[in-house]
Length: 424
Figure 1 (cartoon, one colour):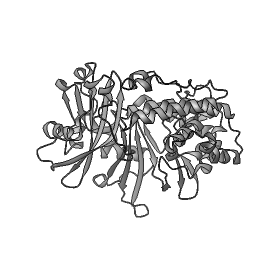
Figure 2 (cartoon, one colour; figure 1 turned 180 degrees about the horizontal axis):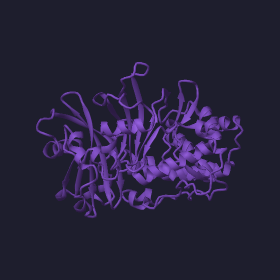
Figure 3 (cartoon, rainbow, N blue to C red; figure 1 turned 60 degrees about the vertical axis):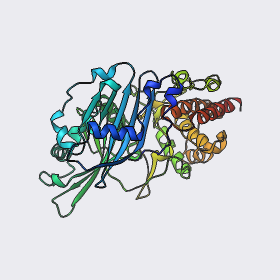
């Protein structure tokens, strides 16, 4: 999957006083899968590797591992451990349960190990993304493709349809590439991107993207090709794109120009605001390092001066180049209303953390040049510094939530860099 590889420190929760939230190590996870999920007729499980981690102090720890099988195939599995007894309430029968067995040939859909406060599942059995079994049902997907006028009725070779999981964040989102074979000579193949979200979030995302198109910003983003809001997923055409790594800032000028076009659009009344602020669990996350816990923290983001369309998750890998030369904004799940300085701060905080240098001018220079080249008027230097400082505090917390190796040092740098920006 297209998640960034990170070295993990499994003992971070224990050092913060939450030893019961220690996630399973790779070897433990493999043993659990063999004992509780692996089907007898499945290929042997050979190995596993970390793909994702999210620690919520006092609540849970969620891990995703990519399993490798003897036949060369790979499949993700989730391990979520709880501290509040919630694991005992997870015996439920979700919608579309009847589809799961067919969708899970190697692994059973889920296993609940109450004695370990641990829940295991494969993506199709995600209890929040309940529409995944419908999305992964080739017959039902084919019906949606036809209803959306993406292919003629009877043209889809359903058995030859293929799914590739690109990104998965448990109970939050799943992104697939779908390759369909068609019975038409002029167009034998159709590739789509599919995003699965909690149904209420899917409805909000589609509403925000519809509002963006109505405001004149449809050319800034990929079009929506089809939706199933009851099940919580949407389809987009698969585009030929040049993408960039999360730590690549070489396209800053072009990214700034695209950002100016987005910010030129006033947010309509009723568009949900992009969430800002400092997380309330930093004390719990930093509890294992007394010196870190006592470091000063920058203030929360200033109140917005004006509301425009915000990307809301503006990082280098969210700006891509189409094969025809156009630049597009991707991953619009947080699209909403907010102050323009917020999108700048997301980019600047990434640059500062990657370069380990609290230099806002270097972090934003090319981005601002591109922004101005398209007629954009950037926020003041003071507002950019204040928003970036708040984002750096958020980065300090995120490195612990992801169980990153060296989280203490990374968080200390981020907090000190935020203070440096406040003094500049």
